[in-house]
Amino acid sequence: MNNRDLLLEKIRESMDSVLPVVVIVAVLCLIWVPVQNDLMLAFLIGAVFLVAGMGLFTMGSELSMTQIGSHIGAQLTKSRKTWLILTGGFLLGVAVTVSEPDLQVLAANVPAIDTTVLIIVVSVGVGLFLMLSLLRILKAIPLRVMLAACYLVVLALALLADREFLAVAFDSGGVTTGPMTVPFIMALGMGVASIRSDARAQEDSFGLVGLCSIGPILAVLILGFIYRSAPDGSTESTVASYADTVTLGRGYLNAIPESLKEVGVAMLPIVVFFLIFQVAALRLKRAPFTRIVIGLVMTVAGLMLFLTGVNVGFSSLGYMLGTRLAEPQWRFLLIPLSMVMGWFIINAEPAVHVLNKQVEQLSAGVVSARAMGISLSIAVSAAMGLSMLRVLTGLSIFWIVIPGYLVAMALTFCVPSTFTAIAFDSGGVASGPLTAAFVLPFATGAVSAMGGNIMTDAFGLVALVAMMPLITVQIMGVIYVISSRRKAVVQTAPAYADTDIIELWEV
Image 1 (cartoon, rainbow, N blue to C red):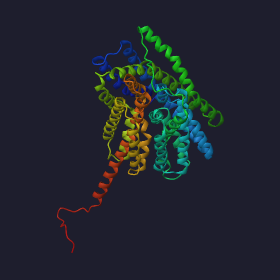
Image 2 (cartoon, one colour):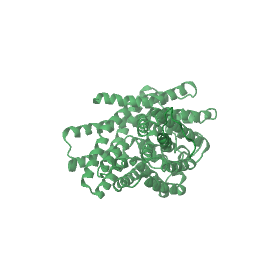
Image 3 (tube, rainbow, N blue to C red):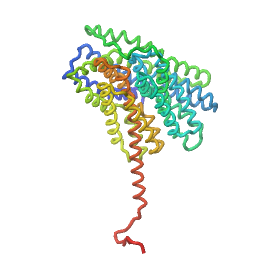
Image 4 (cartoon, rainbow, N blue to C red):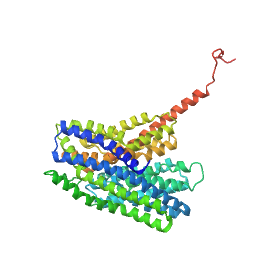
């Protein structure tokens, strides 16, 4: 497949992800809930920006970030020096997380924490846990042991943490497993696993992303103990209005340089890191180096379009729609509408279809891709409904997330380790870019209209959506184990011909 066909494929995948939300919102706004014409037009233009931006970004990430991760991972492992591998893993984890688009969107929506502070804290959390994850691969520490130990620390801190930081902390873990971070970390893990020669080396390379998502949770929970300049959790509406189409066009044009500046700052660390490695150790030939540079340019362009579409069009209408639906006569729509959104968003995510096929292959067809897809759709739909229930009632996320993670951890001792690794690696598959770009502002608008606390009531949505694959994939693993045992019992039963006499008593 040439680059043109690959780009068209990525844009089609992006369109599949964005289109369901556009159709749902358009039907809702044209039939039931009135919004301003300018906001609706800005939303539709933003959808075009998102489709183009996500397509460019995804392709650029495959051409650049995956290759950079593979090359640097291979170079680090050649040294066979543990300290160098761990230090490089930490620096790379921080650098790549800073440029994660989902994190950029989340940080921009958190009113009580400075955007730069939150991005840096989350990135350091990922870097530290990437270092810990690489150490696990090198030392062959069982994944379930590491997960159990880390989540026990998370639960202990969650009991003591500031409630205004609790939901944001769990959301931070969900947004860091995005399209920038995941391919890079996976490629790095595969390179480090190649040091070991035992049969379980490649299997231990899975679970890396799941462990790295714990780092931001712990980092933000710890931040809650020392960060004291936060306001009361409320926020002012930043919804823009446009008098005419020219004003709207200028709004987009003015937003492009701002987004480009944000993207440039975010991408700078990983670009500098790669160039230093290229000069000092990699010395890639012209052709692969040029492909990586082209991929980086496409990544920057795609991320710029994505953030522009989110900031000007998507977030504004999401916030306004949430505000309108929070009015007493429309509140009955909040839960069912969010559940419908969850169902279609998860079905439209290309990474979800990859996950479903992966589970089908792993279970030798016992768990079909279709069954996996339906179960994930139900789970994510339920998560979105629970999020809106929290918006309406003010229920603390503590009473949902903590039992959920306890169930997920209990299941790790009931299923094969590979199912556990895939489950925790796939936590960010469900919480795709649209969750942070549209659904989170939607919840924020609803909470603001009802006079609630955004930090405690609106945030946590990404965390609930990201938690569901941890449970769902492992439940499918339990089904696989039960089916395999039944199949084994049937196969070990003696076979008799039609004319055989079966003795049912002992002599």
